[in-house]
Amino acid sequence: MIDKSGRRDVLQLRTGVKVVRLFYDDIDALKPYLARSFGVPAAKLGKITLPTYKSAKWISNTRLEIVCAGAVNVGDTDREFDFTAVVDSSGKLLDATIVKAPPPPKATPKQKATPGKTKGRGRND
View (cartoon, helix red, strand yellow):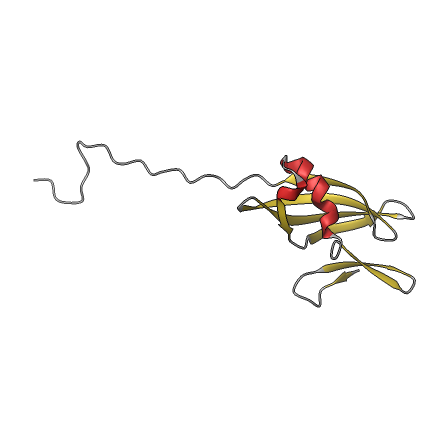
């Protein structure tokens, strides 16, 4: 179930009367997977934003596969990523696959006009 009452969507897993919020309090469980994907030590990773949920499906009686998008601060830049996570019925992260979003294209400098003949808008006399 997705709770849309707050600023961010929160995915909740209900088992009986117990409600577990996925990737909310335990978002740092993704850090080892992110560190491996971005090729930096986990200590160099900053804050992970709460993920945006794309889809979820049960792959067995006790395992749920969730597809999400998120961002993490690496150094001085925020890096976006998509991930597919498998959690058990208690909400514990069992596995995650991180797919890095391509970095934004670098701005190309504008080329200066070469001196010489130029077409003007004036009259040709």
